Length: 447
Ligand code: GLN
Image 1 (cartoon, protein in one colour):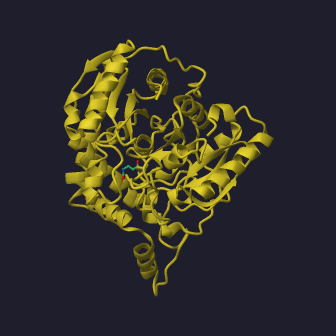
Image 2 (cartoon, helix red, strand yellow):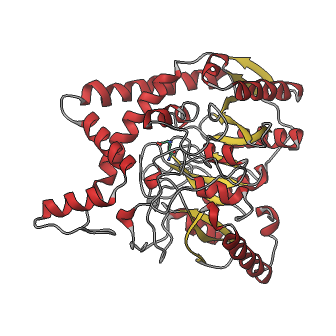
Image 3 (cartoon, protein in one colour):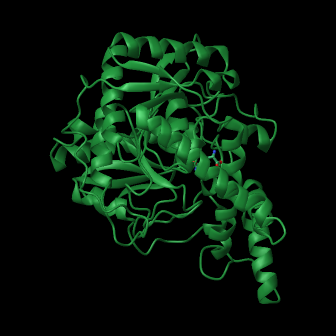
């Protein structure tokens, strides 16, 4: 597939041809189930695939949930407006985990997405459709959202580059909220240059998002420098949860970075299991509140009920999937009086500690290198319980708790051709550093 960088130099006529080719290719690869709904453009420009939780005016938006079926967006998300201002357009809907809750893209009401590298395996989640389409050559680039790893982990499983921007860098206006203090929209692309281009296009201050950072707009593409050298922190004490393949790739990546002239500094960090419990308390609490609006009155599907209460009850019981219900229950529990102090408040305190630890590391280092997931993409059905799935988020969720930018990129392939990815984590608003380091590493590895 043509890269975003070259597509941006094409004429509208040539882009029409590319769009027609994409539609034909998607039809040929229907079994991947990466695209849902009709493929259409919302304007002229380079076609970008959009996750089904980002509003595009006039398009159906469902978050891959039955509860939102038939709901048409009345407005464009900020990122969509920014695409239009930068010679790009929304083109096609990407499949995902229901309401972006998950790590495998199996919970969509449209059916699961498959990994193009091995269709018996998951593509990762929740932006599984966004990553699978880019990896399969069905999209030039896509937008996903990352609350606890949902851009980086599917990009890692499918062999793409995925970038989660700093919290506040990209406006959340028009992104259907899962966990508002953690969510960020970001690019999934074929290479680092394209990630920089797409990040530059979608980032920038937006007064409609009260958490948007009022900073000068980014120019990371123009400033990309593969010769910049950094102090890179590594955590050996984190590796016990990773498979031998991932451990080997981590050590190999450290060696490569060192041979390129980066300085490697060994660090320790709080037990990662705290990241998991803190994240799952905060995200479920916020989700239970955010999803309260889907009651059958204002949006999408409505079940019958004799009273208003019955209508709410029947709509939510019928149209939410199991994982979403589980999280609403968990979230309501940790917020309920009697448990609030024991769980929610504690989690907020631990979150502060986690942020402080990252800050301390970034006083001395520029970048942290970590695996993305404990293993390569698992087979369908390999996760035996929701808890097992939650535990597999161990390497990605700390970044969201601290609002940091992180880029995931492929660094190796295993014997079966499955992608192994690593992530470069930066200090807040230092996207340029991780893009530069990734650009250099990508050139060096030449995979
Ligand atoms: N797997 C994590 C979760 O289920 C992350 C999801 C995401 O980033 N949207 O919450």
